[in-house]
Length: 131
Length: 508
Image (cartoon, rainbow over all chains, first blue to last red):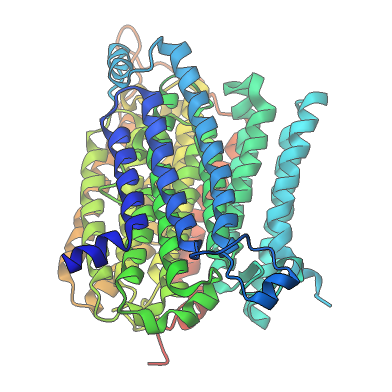
């Protein structure tokens, strides 16, 4: 029990981000629908963002804008760097999603479906083997 | 006051970013001008890269502080012998491919010329960025810039390329996420993102599980990006169905730059001391041996020329990573340390770049995708086919070509470490290379084009335009010339400096 408290409850933020990551992974692997795959990818990325944000968290910490009052009273403040990193990573993830969705739109125009299995079958009809 | 050369690391990156936007604007006014802006920028960048390499070799590393902020808080660009060398290789192939793309893109994507060259420049921005940066998070951002532009370029031909690009996008994003997670672990342990600072802060934590997990995430994430077997599944389709100059860049440069990213993280951040007692490089070399064999065997089974070349790239990534795997145990110069790996990065860029451009030439002339369609084309396109023979012989490893030199050095390194299995793997793969390239050469030349009544018909010569032929001929002649250059050992001091920097040879 002690082990459980020390390893799981005390570090619940990491466990939650691992859980979310696995949910995302599951969606990427198991879903046939391409848009659902991209949603899975987004969930996967979000899990990593949450992991970073929770790294920077400080108990009772306030926004990292240092004022004279803060310095005098010695208020703790959260580490701003992971937030900045994740802001960049979010932009990257939005760009990835945009490219992915535009690919899906073009595939839909080409094949009339966004189910992976059906697209592969249509490619087979054209005589192209796809893994 | 910094000398002009010391500004080049940043300028190399910014120039192509700037050129990407000017190409986009120029595309509205005059679509013909786009390719010239692209080629012009690349030539300037290539000269800068040579200046950087010269300066690095004569006066030591360049450190450029962005905005004048002092590291570890500010971002720092560091140029040393290793990334100077990679930068020269990457900009050389990029310039050659840009020249080639002038006619090929006019032919394949006439409506999308401006956007093609814009995205091509963004790709170069990302690649240069990965190479010059000394900050690990900055590297992640540039890896994503590279990958995003690569997805778009692969998809530009439409149809099946869309599916290939989508698969690459999903796997590539997972790879990049793993890289980001690795950064998170290192940041949690040390609180720094600057590579040099990390290497100073990490030693007390070498036994820590978080640091080891970080290495695993970097290795797996970048293995997806560099298509190391068995994570290569995205590669064959993506490389086969992209426009040919993009295939050449993908196979010749993009996966190699991912290898560079791994080497930079492994030897600059974790350093060679971290790996003592850890079987990381042994695992890498056995996996690579698998990559060499399976890549070659699958290449034999292909009927599509570009897909065959793509599987051969899987095998060649195996060569590079096998050389990396031996880097920490083989220490005797001239083959010790990273020399064979860095050597094969250049050699593979030349050979595979050349072969993909030739495959593109056949597609340009006769829409020839399948190997069996090539029958008799050796006489119709004599120069291109001669170049194909040179590059193919070079892949097989006929002396004094570049392929021979890399194989020789890797074999010498495996002999030094007494890993005779790898010698066998390399020789076997040369044999397999011979089988699958000979098939193509035989079809090109040996079987005479037969006329209706069994007469030999005089075949008309139809070569590709000179702006496509010139890059092919340059690359194929370099396959031999660079091979001779390696054999004279003139460029070896560059790589010796890399090894000394990473403490892989000497000083022990």
